[in-house]
Length: 149
Image (cartoon, rainbow, N blue to C red; front, side, top):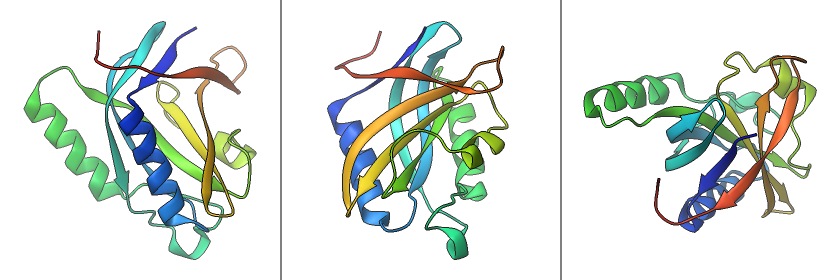
């Protein structure tokens, strides 16, 4: 089973974004390499605006223009980095995906990273992939590392 590897600074970026958005959900995109049975290596965390302002306390939607711009940038760079996942926060809830998260998981190859925020403080971060056999999320290990393969 793959793992997802972040640098300590990238974990800080996730936590900072989650805390800044509290009591609403933060969201953003994850750039890197890997996938399938290989580990995911994050090269960049890209916080974006949550465009569902009226329901941001318990829903998120990554700004579509930010995603388009990022995809164009990655294609132009041609360095092998690609979109490997997205992240969001769960204000005053745990870091396990909700049924709403599952209903919105349209790209099963992308990692779902969720940071729990309790009383404005980031508590834990977990990562999940859709299991093709069950159609449900399965948790994958989150690790910190320096460097890339």
